[in-house]
Length: 484
Image 1 (spheres, helix red, strand yellow):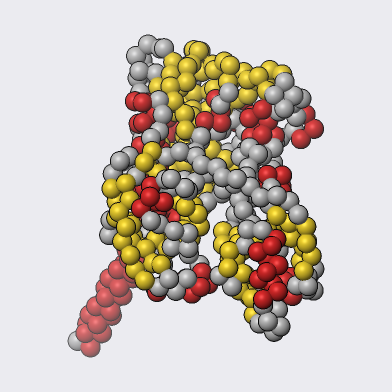
Image 2 (image 1 turned 180 degrees about the vertical axis):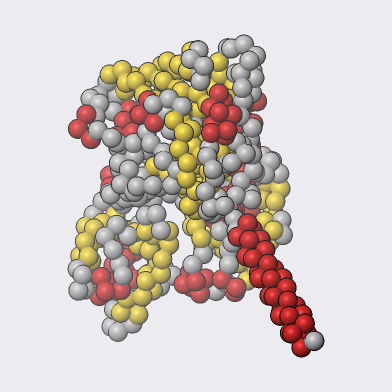
């Protein structure tokens, strides 16, 4: 009887242990199965689906003094006005053969990529791929070739639309969304790097909202998918084969760093170029920059959010409405703005002739002004004469002229005194002043000439702290405090 009872207890324990072990095994298995797959099995299906919509673009251009292709593929892609100063970090853009650059005035063949927008033959590419081209030749994935004409282009976003006359069996790519595109998401680039047609590379989204100094509407997707010369204009795809970006730029010295224009920015531009051949943007007529904490304190802006007005163009809408330099714009039609990029996008997406309410802070007081937007135009102003002067602060300055402005990476219309020399152990050097900085104000007094500068320095008392408002290329306005 005892033996039978003992066996019963033992069997019960074993069954219980088996259930627990089984339960634990199932949980471990379920946990393992729930773990996300970090790498797709392959990209074969995506590549087969998308490659027919990607094209190779060959152009022939007549170059003078290197021309636009020279500047983009062999030097400065931003032309004469270099936003990065004398040393451009994009100096090696698309520069595989440094010693074989073109000589002035000759026929240059170049390569790029693009993708089919619709069955009518419209193709999306980069503006720099076709800019100044005498001939544009498009080769499809099936080997057919066609001459192409330019429908429209937008240098500010580096987008262009070309068109081929082909039969209706073209296979367009589908435009996706990048609002939900997250850093770390897998993406695929297809193009013709170094002329190697239909090359497929994969990587992840490394960053979003990148500003690289290419234009006023910078908002790039950064990716480590391999992008090289010839990829420009080709698509960046999500794993559903939808276009989420247009591959545009690389940094040759930064391995695994490429940039693509997001479709959120590109869709409206592409639509305007296809339908009208040009892009119409609204224009307020101000120069702006982000508001730093130091500038917010300097201009008495509570909350330290907004966009600083650095310049008002004479005769333009902002000037007519009464907006002034040093105003801080905090909202447009009640919609708050925290960055210059956000303000630019809101204004650019508004209609020409539309009235918008601009809420701003001026000397600590809030105002709302009505601005009737105009069509965007480029403005240029006069420049000052050149002159040199050394002060006891350990720096040397000259009045800006077109040559010095270009040398230090500013527009020809820039006014003020540019710092050409700084003693590292001097008062200015220790305070953070750098060569290339433009002095705009000292103790809230505008500085446009050397006479303005000398007068402020003469009136400043010994031991007084000078608040110096400077403009730094590719950084904007900065307040530096220097003991007199």
